Image 1: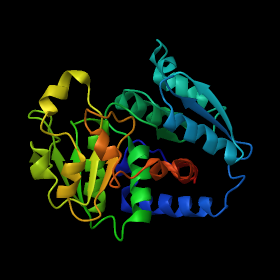
Image 2: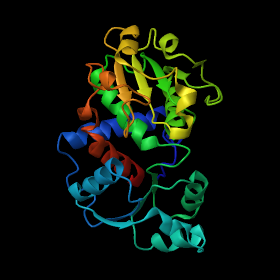
Image 3: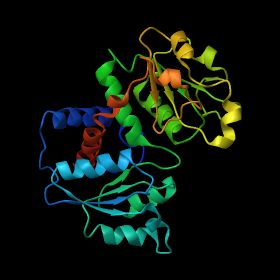
Image 4: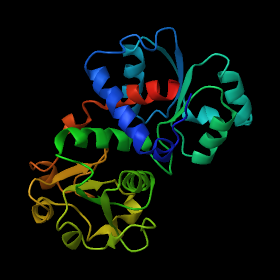
Length: 275
């Protein structure tokens, strides 16, 4: 049994194992791997892609899922007691909740695997799926030069963690005061984009948009990057904010199909944690 609370829980070896499992699931293996097993899910009503792919993935592997709202974990009962009881009936728990410390307490008390489906601090499953998709599109995705455009937060933190584990080059473009510790930083997107192979973005709260006025990724900006460079905006993305409409309409945008195998990556994560 393993928990997945952050990419550091996996390391390079674990990431490779999840990619191998995803390949085999796509090939049609593990069709009833969750047969007779129950997964408890905690998701807010606003979740679309992550919830759909986990629920669909559990069902495809023959498992049963039971859904609760994330705020069910915010009641007065100690989180250690909640997960102490859940472990008597569930085989796996998938949690989307703002608090990573709460999830860490849950994992410490849980007799079954806990999968982090997003916190305010990180989003390991999202970045795993992006890396998996890039591994299928790029000659060697670990040799590419990456740029993250956005503030320090869950997406940026997980990209930084992935870069540290896998050894790829990553820089950040952001407004002043929004830096991720340890990354080379640019405050002008035109300077930051030069020589990049993969440009990733995260959406921004309305209140900070003025601070990122020099950071919007446009089609013209993408032309400053290396030949064949791709734009990978984390959904939901917003045209006219972190990315322009013409950038999304361009051939640089990875497209909706970039997330085609998100289900299989989520399935691979669950099988890995249950092994």
